[in-house]
Length: 111
Image 1 (tube, rainbow, N blue to C red):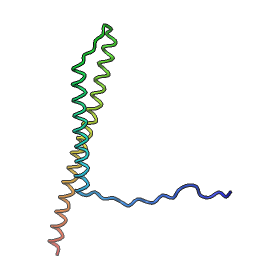
Image 2: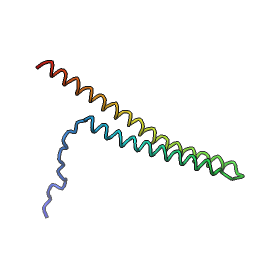
Image 3: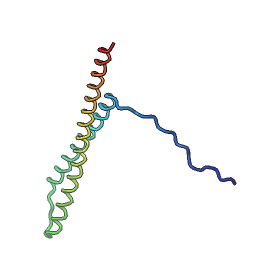
Image 4: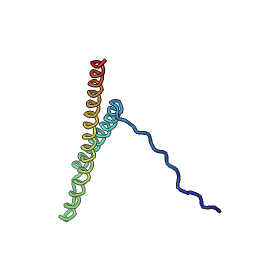
């Protein structure tokens, strides 16, 4: 058996540029995820509120309350992150559109 080069050759990926359409598509997807996470958070919080903790032991009540708070908090954090990403992608799309419009105006002036 001969030792050959066992590492696979990787192709260099082509550089992908940002376009307004890609940014808006990403914003729609991220906005949908934010809305889904928000709806999930409301459903979880409503479910927790409808089912109170029954226990005599104060430690059990404190731990259950902490776990409920953490669960709702993590889902709220995910919802907020997706919302911020949506706003950022929409701002990027607006910036790219403005850059395209200003470049077109500059090219028309120099002709």
